[in-house]
Image 1: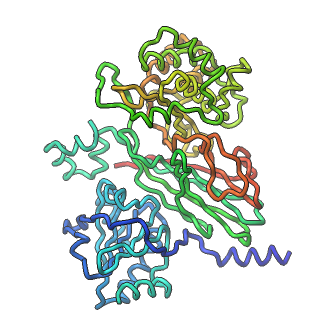
Image 2: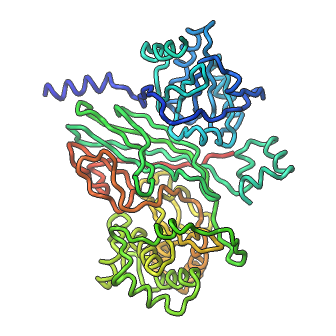
Image 3: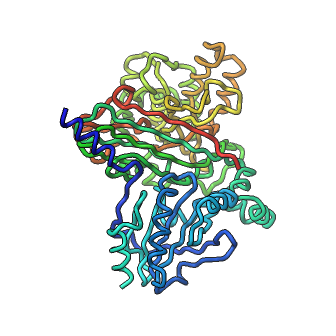
Length: 164
Length: 360
């Protein structure tokens, strides 16, 4: 009985979406990334050298992707004035669907379009959300597959480490 | 025309800019689908684990995977692969304290019908020696010697090319086997036992595995393709498509053989037998128009109202406590308290799979 109660209590507080963790990247060189945002402006990851960049692959049909977006925005807002940028890459969805999402959830970072999913393939973003933290030297340092609270202390500590 | 050629043409590039890419793809015959798989591991008191097959990772001119995501209360979930064939699966794990382990996996992918034109060989299409060896090798349930080879040699006597051999094996399967509705799931594909019993009844995993075994035993590279039907048939076959968005029991495996000049060629003799047994009003004669049309189309063609998961045999589930190798991974597998649950027993691994087509 006690065990069942304890299990029930733990079930209540357990996460209801796919919890991920930041892991050190050991997957090799950073693939190129040059994509347009919703207004047609080109973003080339190479031009962000010197900054810490969060490259986040997402889709509107991906529930955990949508769920973690506000925490990415909170992280970004908390780092205003620091060399930190977010590039959120939508995986192969029509412009109208991404625009609708952007209207429903205004975000302060650019939403890029991976129209044919080629960038997602190159980055091996098979399980969404797939997030890559890029160091100021342009190398991938951490990766997370699944939903993450990007405004948590643990994540902030990793980003702060890369910003040094 | 493949996607690259499509985008290389100036007019197509202009079209792709003016339409969404998915619309451009749709004009090239591609359809986009989404499947959602919900898994509940029932009555689990210890550590629970689940293995969910994912869409084929390698893109082809008939299927492209966009991506997958998951939600649920698993403490960890990640894409893992079986070593030998690279079978992709989502592996999830729950700690002992989790009273109601559950997982929901959403996958998006595009498919396009396949049809090989045997009048137009392309000499560049060939297999490496290593691949030829790999796809003619036996598996644990598909030996390529003994009764399998003896049967295949008899069937292919006089056939000269790989296409000739593949075709006579296909016709032999259609003429000599039958779909047995009493077979559990899709069958297990124990080819030797099937031939030794003399009772050539089974379902897709039996009949198409028999096709693969017979082909491999006479040196024709072949492989099973495990997957699930995701939409009704557009060719009017009630038995070859889904009847509703709930596709939990729509698992289906197919087969391919490789022929120099034609690449991997899709076949599905098991589906011809399914048309015979199940197409209304049922028990159709092999001379029925619908059977004849299916028989013709399913040598060299697949309607892609079906999602391919993988082409693996003898699959070892990573992190499984003491699970034996599975002949294939087409169903959801789960383990609780150190025991692998029966993948075909709905009370021990409750799952529901739904499918929908995504409009352009």
